[in-house]
Every structure is written in structure tokens, then in C-alpha cells.
Length: 138
Length: 131
Image (cartoon, rainbow over all chains, first blue to last red; front, side, top):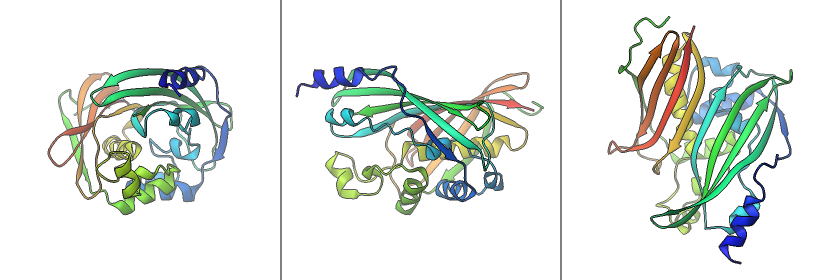
């Protein structure tokens, strides 16, 4: 299949909201996450460290169709915006969407950029954080 | 209080020593099971030098750099990270940061991660509101 067809089909996802994912922030999960980073701060027994939300509701950038483009994924970047602390017991809903899709030519061939945006709300319906991520197919 | 917080000042650095074990721990804790982070053969098949660090693990390190510095003096409001190079386990990863702007209680910083050759493989910025 021609690469342009694949790009067009991926572009068709722009603006579409994905199925929301809801999960509770568990103390054991926070502990494993802080241990994986190697961050011993006792604050993370109760509160989520800055990058934790990606773990509670992975906004899978595995847009299956994108796997027909190139041979692998790279993470280009992440931007987090924090509005309220996230604590143990909070019930977080992540709603993601594909914000943009574009192709760029790189030194070793073309790259496909997929920009994802995720909004995280808590059990009170308040937005606690937003995440913008750049996934790259190469 | 923004006392003692001045533009141009570097914040205390944080040096991490990632291992393959830590990559597996991070895969499990984050739910990112992409094989390039724990399967050497898979990583090489997609033209990587071997397994590489998760971008978000490096963001986690830089997040620790920031929250260690902030302590209970304020709140992290935003945090932006751009991954510019690959990092492999078994090599030190040095996290650094510098204050770029202070306006009342609002502080802006640049943060970055360096590989063992001093190459900046991760570039980022953050905004902090001091209490």
C-alpha cells in the first residue's frame, strides 16, 4: 500500500476523541512507579509524581494503522500541564484525541508525527492535568 | 517566597544510573511494553543500538530533579520535555536545570538531560509557582 494512503487514513483520526479510560490511583502503583524512576521522595506515597498520569491511563499512542508506516515508534516529546494535585484514591478519567498528524523528511527518510492530547479529570469532574505528546513513526 | 531564586542560577543536579532492570521496572509500572526497552534483538531489528531508555523515564528523572528542588516551596505548573537523542542503560544520565525567569512568585526553568559525553539528549522547560 502506498505510504500516502496510510498517511491519509491516519489523518482521518485528527480531532476524534478516543474512548475515555478511568482508573483509581492506587498506593501500590504509585510505589512501583516511584521505585521505577528511583525517586525516594516520601511525598509519592500519597501523591502522584509529575509523570505518573501516563501510567494510570496509558493514552496508547498505538494507533494501529500508524504501524503500517515506517518500522518503529519514537517518543518525540511530552508536555504536562498541572491544575490540581492527584492523590491516592482519586478516580481519574483520561480522554485522549489525535490533535494533528503530519509528515516530515528527516536525514534517514520520512517521519510521521502524531500529536496526541489527553485531558485528565478527577472524580469531582475537575480537570487535574493535560498532556500533549508527540509520537513519531520512523 | 522567591528569595534566593535568581535568573541564571543552576539548581542542584541529579545523576541517574539506569540499568536494564530499571527499564523493565519502568515498563511494568508505566504500562509501556514496547519491546525496544527490554528486547535487545527487537531493538536492533528496528535499527537501534540496543534497548534504549523510555523517553518518559527520562521525563520522570527530570521531574524528580524539579520536585527535589521545589520541595514544599511551591508547585509545578507545567513541564515540557523534548527527546533529542537516544540513551542506553549502563551509562550515567545527568539531569540539570537553570532558572531562566523570575517574576514575582512565578519561576521558569530550563531543564536538560546529558549523556556521559555531555551531549544534551533531552531538552525541557518548566514553570513553577512559589507559595
